[in-house]
Length: 241
Image 1 (tube, rainbow, N blue to C red):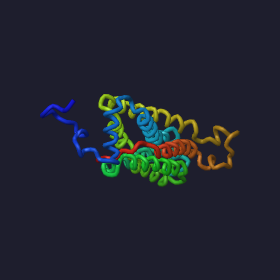
Image 2 (tube, rainbow, N blue to C red):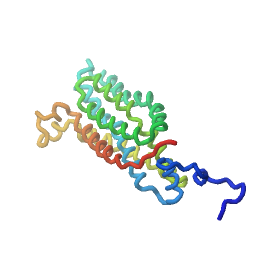
Image 3 (spheres, rainbow, N blue to C red):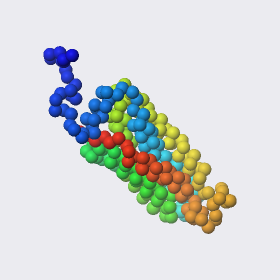
Image 4 (cartoon, rainbow, N blue to C red):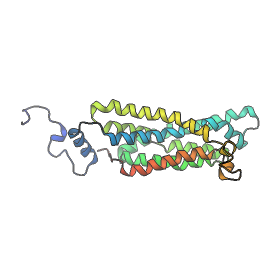
């Protein structure tokens, strides 16, 4: 049936508004045709949000002992003072760059920003576990936060890849994955830190994990992030128009 005269016509039905090869137009057309849940896109949402959340809180169970072992505090009472700066450096870096990453996601697309953010998790979370000075620990955590622009673009991606009636579910998946990451992260950090002392039959006192007792939990999170990074090769592309 032809459109009634004077009726409002959706933009994608107006000739010339669909651009061949444009990921945004392709997704809009897909949402018009397919009315079910985008399970593949939701899986990417879940895994990426989990990757972003895990490094945030994984250090807190062992941060006191890490600062103690770095010998930066002259008194035991000062350990908490120095630990606070390491814990805050991630969010300080993040608050400085979050807006910039949002602008970049609008300009160059969601996927490049997400891929770069996960790559930053792999690199700087690993380096944090290998920190041998206090300033290295602060610098790696700061760069981890500053270069981790995942949360804003992935929320935008959640809205863009699903129909309006599924947007609340998409955003709830983001929040749920984020919350689970903040639960699992400290569990990993507490259980896997100082493995040479906790599991002497598995980790030798002369091993790398004995020299860097807080490297194992960071390594496990980085390996998970690397797997997600590889999976993002097949992530459906979205680029702002």
